[in-house]
Image 1 (cartoon, rainbow, N blue to C red):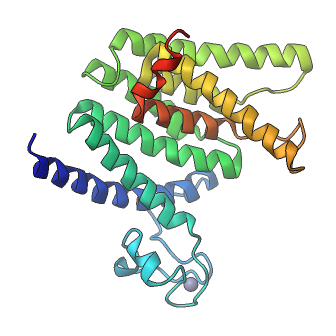
Image 2 (cartoon, rainbow, N blue to C red; image 1 turned 45 degrees about the horizontal axis):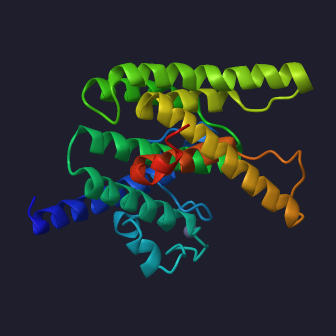
Length: 257
Ligand SMILES: [Zn+2]
């Protein structure tokens, strides 16, 4: 493909991603609070003034208003433009890596979903069913139409992704009488398996567990946690699957697994 056409497509994906990121902010705030994602319109969290369209332009409005509401000057969290920038980058990199084809849409949409799940799990320690269960179907359907992996591998990934953490939960309950993982992790890992297939699912699980152990160890080392501190495993799964989707070649080192 011509260089400038490729650049134009990447720029378009960036703008699309920024707009989706603005919507993801609504999802991240409202879905765990069981609020509607379509109404009411977005409003300032401090003064409840509805936000005008010109104050809701992804990233730019936050920069122009320097992170404050136009009406009450209340602070607007930096998380909002960061989510928009991340969603934009995920879209641009997906097009840069895969061009525009079925797999691009699959990678982009699953990365957006994972970004939202990562932040919801971090804040609320839940992975909402309304997001994880449709994602399983999403992965299976895309693999049928030429997605990230084959259909057979997608089914195998979804099954192992569901069964493996289920056995961990049952084993932990039997051995120690506690929940090692949540049922949200089971559904999310099944969706990861449906998107990336069996091998990818296992590697993502291993890397998420290592990330969790590193972060847990770091928190204990700086005196901010103990062995009993609950870490949002879904957040680590999201980081690991995004790395897998966007840096497939850098994972070859783990291929014997
Ligand atoms: Zn306000």
